[in-house]
Length: 357
Image 1 (cartoon, rainbow, N blue to C red):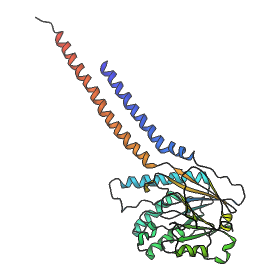
Image 2 (image 1 turned 30 degrees about the vertical axis):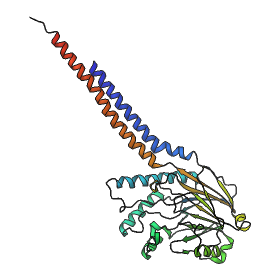
Image 3 (image 1 turned 90 degrees about the horizontal axis):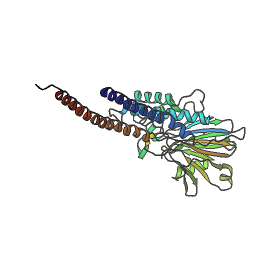
Image 4 (image 1 turned 90 degrees about the vertical axis):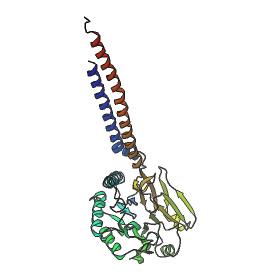
C-alpha cells in the first residue's frame, strides 16, 4: 500500500509539472499578445478621405552567416514566427490602406549570395505577404544594400533590392498622397513628377533619420520636395523630431499624438519627422513596436503598437526548465530516503518475527 501511495504521488507531481508547463507555453505564445494588444490605441476615421498607414521598421530577417551556432535554425524560426504573429495582429487591428517598410528588411542582404538572397526574400514574403493588402512602399536600409559607416554600395545590391521589393511600389495614392523615397546612404531621393507636387500631401520615407543630421541632402529635400511629414527608422528607437528646432521627443507611451501638418509648415515653418521603433526583438531593445498613422486632410494622428518583449518570454522558459530539473532532483532525493528506511524497517521486522529455538 505504501509503495502504491508513492507511485500515485509521483504521478500527481509529474502531472502538475506538465500542467504548469502547458500553462506557461499557452501564456507566452498566445495570452501575452492579447495583453499587448489591449494597450493599443485605436484611431477612428472621421472623414471619407481617411488614409491608414502601417509603418514597419527594421525587421531584419536573420541570415545564415553571422550566427552559425547549433541553435541558429531555431533562432531564425522563432524570430520569423514572432514577426509574422505581430504583423498579423497589427494588420487586423489597423486594416491599413498602405504598408510602409522603412528599410533593413534583411539582416544580411548586403553580403548575401544570390541563392541566400532568394531564400531571405522568400522568408520575408512568407511573413509579410497578404493578398488583401497590396499597396506598399519599400525603402532600402544599410543591411539591405550596404552603406553603413561608409561601406561600399554595389550596383548589384541596389538592383536586386529594387527588383524584389520596389518594382510594384506605390507613388501616388488616391490623388492626395505622394510618397518620396529618400536614400541617405546614396544622398539621393526620388522626385519624378515635381511639377505636380504642390497638389499632394507629400510624405518622405527614409531608412536613416534626416532632420537630425542636416547637411546638403536635407537642404535639397526641403527645397525640392518640401515634405509635410517624414517617416524613418534605423536607430530602433521611437522618437519625434521637429526641424529647425532641436526639439526631440522620446515617444514611448501608449497614446496618440496629433499634428496639424499644414499649420506646422505654413504657420510655424517647421518640418516633422517620426522615427518608428524596430519591430524585431532580435535588435536587443526593450521597447518593440510597429507605427500606426492616420491621415485626414492635413491632420496626422500617430501611435505605436507596442509588442511583447520576446527575450523575456524566452528567459522564462529557461528559468522554468532549470526549476523543473532542480525540483525533479530534490523530489527524487526526498522520496528515495524513506524507501530505504522503510525497507530496512521491514527487513528488521521480518527477522524479529523468526521464531527462536
